[in-house]
Image 1 (cartoon, rainbow, N blue to C red):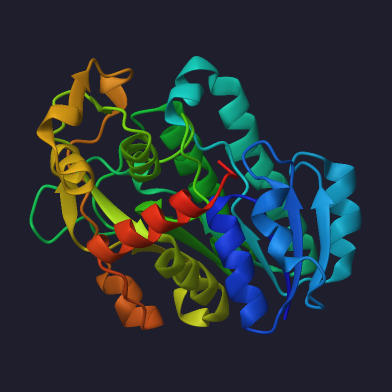
Image 2 (image 1 turned 60 degrees about the horizontal axis):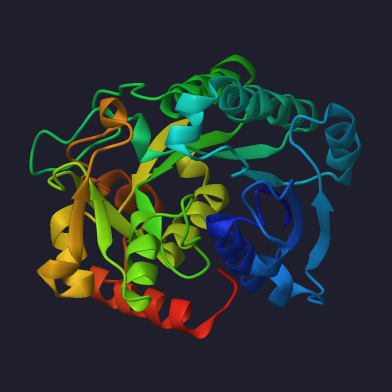
Length: 314
């Protein structure tokens, strides 16, 4: 197929690109490099299936008008502002990128009959209240402008399915980690913790550390994202993906550093937007896509640590 991926030079986007290329599709990447980096996709240079890398913005309507003339079969829309604290500090930028930008992509997909896979987030949920984990029908809560912008975009995406019959799917991966994730302030907790461990620094935990995360290895996530585009069974649906196992931030820190003296608790920067318990129920993904995670948390930590040790990219 002919596929456009926005945010394809980002952390998850890079792995989705790899999966799509391995599956034999022709791939175009659109990224403004606000979160992504060209180094992430450098190894794909020269691959005959990578058709073009466009440095540009999803809000640039003239660019989109020209780009969508290439007659794509699927658009994987991963391009977004992704930082919760930045959304609190500057809600307008997150809204413009995540909601308005998604609207512009939607309009192009509607005009050209392109299936849209919309990357949302587990951060739209309230919290897990049972051991079954969070299901797609469970309550949502816009606890940050980031979550609010994603929820608004989700609703627009689904409205195009109901109003125009556009094939769309909203996907909500849980906390994704692995190689190529940034290890600084914009990175995920896993990458930051491993980097600080390797540097001999303390692992700083926001709040009391009792909050839990469901950590999904990035190659499992990329397989889920790709398959959501391939299947008509998820059209018009919201679908979760996660490990199906949660771990407290305290226990994660101990698992990584194995030395309580190197763990430090600091005041939370946005306690009002914290989600106390994130645990994914991925039954729907397994039923409709035949997808389930393959990489155990302990194995994923090892893979990620080996990658961070081996690179100077971060």
